[in-house]
Image (cartoon, rainbow, N blue to C red):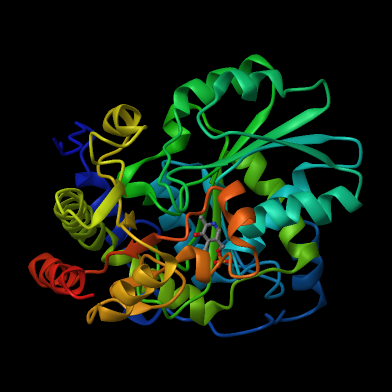
Length: 404
Ligand SMILES: *Cc1c(COP(=O)(O)O)cnc(C)c1O
């Protein structure tokens, strides 16, 4: 009934890059760890040095240097290089949050009179930004159903500049056919931006399939410890250079200390994601066999509508599973309250398991009818699996399902 996603794309190199990429073998003060350069600005020895720098001449000993914190920081830069290596990208750019990464990228790539295509089941704030903010700036959008590639191609207009999607999506873990999307976009000379926060570069690397830009909320798996807000965009040198300029103007930079914490998290990304892939598949299988669970959404299960695409493109199904509990919204809340290990909280991707009922969290302000229209069932539970023992998590689920 169930199957493990088994993709030959190994994660071996990625695990090594997660530990080493972007660091020099010899660093200032012989520090093993990337030094935390907690400074807002940088000094110039004299006017000649300033003039040389401004005219793009090599500085002193030839080492690259920074001018002001909004334009760059060596700690942040080292983490950007590591994340670029993980995505097999030329370059990457960090931001103060995932939304700062998304909004800066969209503002930078779109202008009045242009058109953007979104897939539904896309991060709520991304949709809000496109539907409300970009609309006010004269940028039109079309939202197409996730997985409907004919509708997607039909939505492309002469002024379409960008297709924005996610994979896997929240909360139904829909998986995009990335080569198919890239082919459609390239045929029409439209750029593509994919949010793979839920997958991480351990499970899928969209640039390898011809996607132009990858974005992550690094708040989630990349940092992995629920203690940092950050965002990252990765892609070709040209696109990232343009975005770097926009970031300097729009100002959504990441604080160096947050970058330093993010780097510490990234070092254990491979260990965490492997464990989360494995545990989540086990939880999904357990839930699918339980009589009180009506439906389970996990791309690693054969019952998921995108299982075949996931099996072809992803190393593992990721650390989030969504499922529907038989009964009312209250029955579902009672089950959630009976769980002892996962904590009720938004977000995902950290070492602690988190649980939420989307109807009462992200969609609390909608009526049951509006929620159904948006595809959010009242009895849906989203479970973001941490790195606890899978046996403990399953025993906890079993006990909570047996109650009430
Ligand atoms: C959390 C999240 C975001 C927003 O990221 P922040 O770091 O919270 O700003 C964007 N996309 C997805 C898929 C997310 O899960």
